[in-house]
Image (cartoon, rainbow, N blue to C red; front, side, top):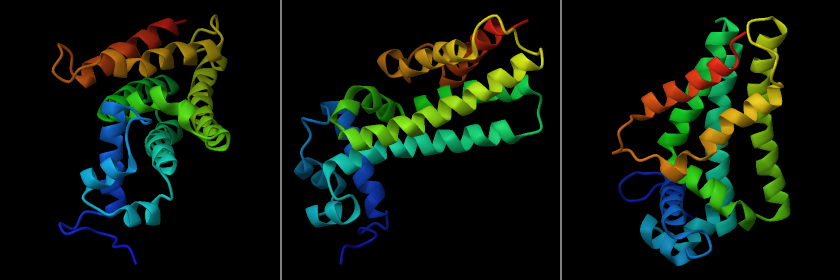
Length: 197
């Protein structure tokens, strides 16, 4: 029976996921072996296969973990009683901050998607689409109520913002001139200016 925690009390799945995320981001999914992951996590291969089944399952969980976090936060913004402009700006800034907070995950997301089987790839894309659709619904709500300009289709507005978010892992550095909050504010403000009636 595989242990649920290691010697220092950390959950084994979390240790495996943390080690895999770092190694996939630094060396690439295809150049990282199961042996390297378990050694970095300080666990056995049996523990990895008990919790994840395969290296590909670990990769899928890297995507799933980030998508679940961001979906949960977006849902909370969308459900709040704040005006739609406040809700959208908060969500637009939050996705930037959470992406920067999980920069290894974001790096892996766009570099290694093609390593997933067609079925797993389809599942991840469906989760990502759900997030984008919820975000788009906020844009559409503001457009239909006249708070936002409807000159640009909501789909294009969403693609514009997420194009910026998806490239954060290629240029953002924690020791750079801007904090994650400053980057989030700038990108959210750009989005809101684009929607100004």
